[in-house]
Image (cartoon, rainbow, N blue to C red; front, side, top):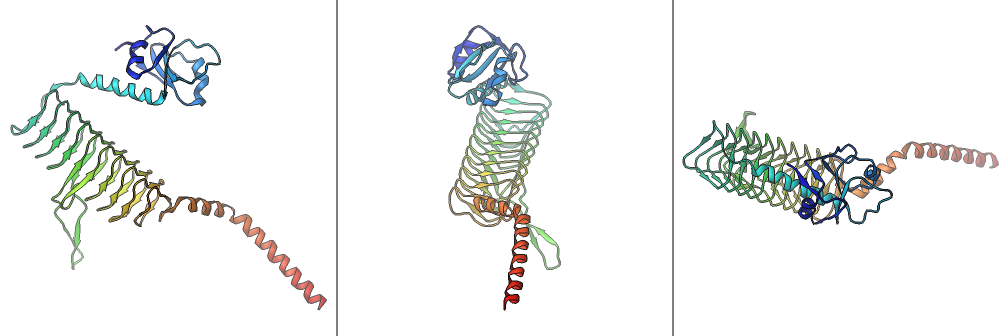
Length: 351
């Protein structure tokens, strides 16, 4: 699909600097883009490529000053990175808009409710009393269990599994292989050393504008609901245990795990491979460094922690700096001990 600079500028509220009729049909990185491709420049360290790239159109910040002539048509915007992201989103929406209808083979129970303009890919299963909103895209191999609801404009990529009774909000994106609503890890120890499974009869509620990466698992609650609040973004390979509540606009990076019944506040950031012990509470704005292990409730907002067990980030940096200096400190202590011994010997000699 070809589009010219004038049209792109309208889509991202930019101003054309050059030939507005220049057309592109794909995207490329500024350092390797070819003719007919669009690129962007937001990071100053890539500025040299502005003058050497073969890209036909480049989105740049409106404050960018040119040090030499450029061959590409420029589109000046307030924030080149955000403008490029917005353009990619619009492009993706246009491509997905072309996906409509129900491919075969697929199974849709007669009691299910389907909204307008949906796409159901081949080998998709939609169970009893499921409710699918308008403009929903279900890619091939998606499983929608009984009594599941999917809100308008949501996208479920290939292989997503939504177990019975779970609710997905509007404009939610779930990437391939993710499982929503599998059993929570609940087993009661018995006197004979065996474990008795505790039935997990709750569900999972995912609110609006959430994005969930590939192969992430969100367990259903024992009773009640595991809740992912609006605006939250989960990376690939994240584990959310039963009865966890994740606050608005929280981001969790890959391979992090949140244990059962922990409550995360809003605008929290959790780094990759971090682990959160169960039944804790993390205050709004908490930042957990990668590979940290949080074992205690964090009550103060906007606290940053690191390490295992996790503790104050600034104090941890001081400790790390001190530990790096330990060999030098050991040498200085040895020298001081030697000096003290010499002074003692001199004192004994004088006495």
